Image (tube, rainbow, N blue to C red):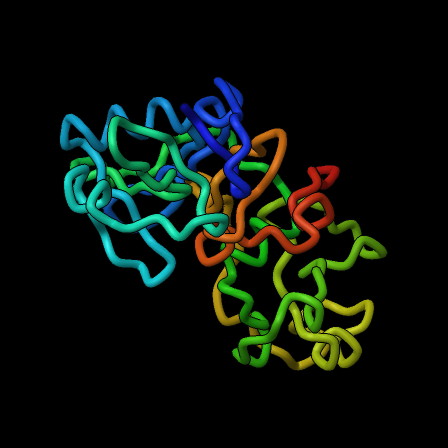
Length: 213
């Protein structure tokens, strides 16, 4: 029998709920079902990850006690086993190659949240996107002409090129080979256990496709 957090029978819905899959570097690469996650654990291709980032094979995970009313679990003969919400693959260290979405999230990720003029790191809400060659001077909106920029440097630069403003770019902007962030946007619930591995705050805004011109 499968039970939810309050011990209510949950049928196949719980087995088909979502589990975040990490590669060996603990980077998110996929979302799978609880049913598939348990299969990967049982055959030794993955380990479960708990809230303290400890990893467990199938037997050690099954040996963990389940607090009544506190943990999602699947009933087994004589015991219950916790449902893992995050698993890490044991022999996969790649990120899937895919189309690079031209978005705020990926531009900030490419530039590591670092202003490309002063070199300081900022939270995303204190950053802006700057056209290296301003649009007023024929600059276009694409990977090669947009950089991460702090608000202060953005005001100083204004509608000028870096040379005109007496500023220097830390690095020339380029199109990334692939997206630094997981592109999976799973439907349904996201779980608290996923939070350390995903940047889900305002994801629709940060990862919206920008218009290349």
